[in-house]
Length: 428
Image (cartoon, rainbow, N blue to C red; front, side, top):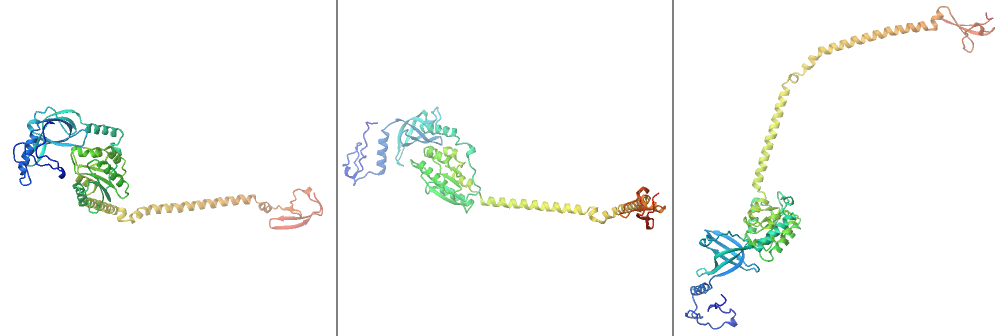
């Protein structure tokens, strides 16, 4: 290929270095301001030059592999530089492949440039495709995935539940993107009062990972933000590598505010999906899972109120029936029945009580009489009644023996009905 000369129409675009047009190699008239080539002629010449390039073997990484109608349309990325070529594999060529291919595979391909004059587009047609080994991007991604998994950043126990109704949603997305419009529109349709704090960031390119990580830190530090959504509207494998950047993934894992990843691509799972508290398949799905539907919630409230009313009504009716059963019982229908059935028994016990009291009083009276008789029998008065007397000296002491008396001593004789003073003549 190195020996193929440039076509006659390729010139330096700098005005100062534009040479005079040389005659075309195919013998046709050169292009001049007075006689320019039609676009069809230019396209035909470009196609003729590209067709002369022939086929070439190239090595790269498959970053996109899509099948449509049996044909494959994909992209091949340079292993060391950010250069990508589109390619196609016709169904007849693909049928000859013995291996299966997918994005992330490192391959060598036999390519032939193919220029379509009518549309002015250039693509690479693949004639052969061979595996070289696991692609560098996929290998590095798998190595990082295993490392983060071992550190426990993917554990379900680390995930934080989303708030039932966030007052303010932090949204990280590309500026004027369809993903931003989808999230905001669907969220406001479900709950019109929801508020957003949008942080625009690059979602592809060299600075995308750092920009998204900075947005996560900024919204995580905002006390009004209740949940953060990181979203973009899908993309090929290469573009989604931004959301597998280690710094970005570790920033998301350290985020305290609940984080939702809505990259919008079902086939791929960037590492951000693994560490996020919730993975949404699309931006629309993220809005539906973060914000409750006000119509559904009102319906739930109405259902709950209906169940409460039925329960209260059932409880009241049950209590009314129970009170009715209680009132129908004989004791409640005729309360005097209870007194009447006990009146005879009460009269009997009253009579028995009076009889016992009379008996007790009678027995106590007899006992008092007996005690009085005993007391009278032991009383000194009974002795005096039999003719005895008590002799006392002037000091009140009782004279017990005749020897104790002295002549001329004054004594007081106590009789049954009084006392008589006397004087002792002599003692015998």
